[in-house]
Image (cartoon, rainbow, N blue to C red; front, side, top):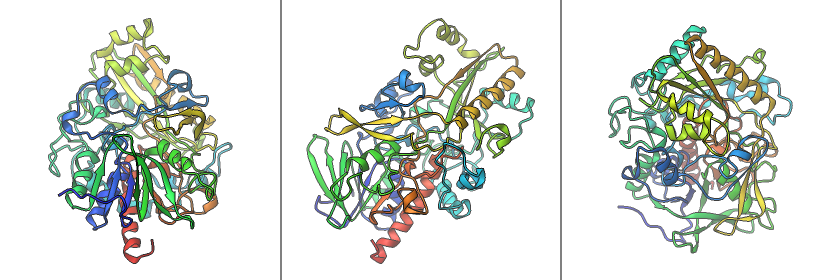
Length: 526
């Protein structure tokens, strides 16, 4: 039976957000007998709400509240109100994610040490290592149903488009070519069916073969009787007492009325834009620069990965839309080798865009129209596509700030999302464009389109982990350096971005954090 907790119950954990971080922490705590309330800003979603339609689902699930793009990236002009594409709804961006589940490499936890520092980048080593996180990666892969050694599930079948990419990759000497790891069932597992290769992974998996907290962690947490979920509840402020200890949150409920939920602990998991925004909006006389911000790092070091798209018109039909959205990965450039002209590495991920999204992104601009676009769409069935995903340098100037005058529907300053490429990002992107040109030319491509970054789905940093309080916002458990009973549970705690997609690491950290938090609560240490 679903739990119902009183607003004045100060024994509970309040979790803000229901995605990879928040949803996982909630279930892990619930299974350990710890009671929590999840406050989700978006609406309730279910498999019945999912449609195999790009634009329909974009409108249905996307976070479209007022935001402002800033900085020198092209989106400040071409996507002024959409700096990021994340989900506002139950399950968060695990509804939208493509399923790629790659572990971080050892050197990616210590980029400052590995690189010796990069001019203009605010690099810092993580306060944890790969060895420390390995057992939690194992737990995450078992939970999510990640194809590969831990679960024993085979990788998904190769699509025609991935076969195109793989052949070109081989021709230029690449060999690290796999159709995984993906957290999409390749066979029936955990009460969910095997993938049917429908192809609308990023619109939500209609059959539930792709892991999402929407139909795994969240219902399981509720079924324990230890977790209550309140949707359409936007948290406006985290409150604290005279000593600085967090006491609860103020939120707008589904009717727009302000409510106050007391708490023993607050876990912030609203993604890397809303989480720092909430902390900054929770300023007080005791914390004039925002909660957990003695370092001045809240909102800073915003990272989205170095990204780009490359689409080639092949001499024969490809039909890239057939199969999973990301049907395979090439990782020959994911290692560290600064002789290439940049620090860090990148992956090549086969990515199918439908006609709708391709029309919006094929030629940078606000219209999604013109001769160049239409001629490209006419060749859609001949197209092969790749998304480039690489390490993004943290910079203090890349940050989430509060708008000086413009307010949202709740009367709070809207977030201004500053993003400017570091020269390292530019060098890496140009290298990847060059490698993709070699791959597609080796296959006889008739035309190649180089696309700049899309609105970000990988949002990281802004509340980063650090060994020292002066360098970051949270410690190695995601616990605020400044406030013992305040935690950050999402990708905003990432110290650096590394090159892999972030969801697997968010889940691994969330399982680890929940274990620590439950132990501390039992000891009475928090």
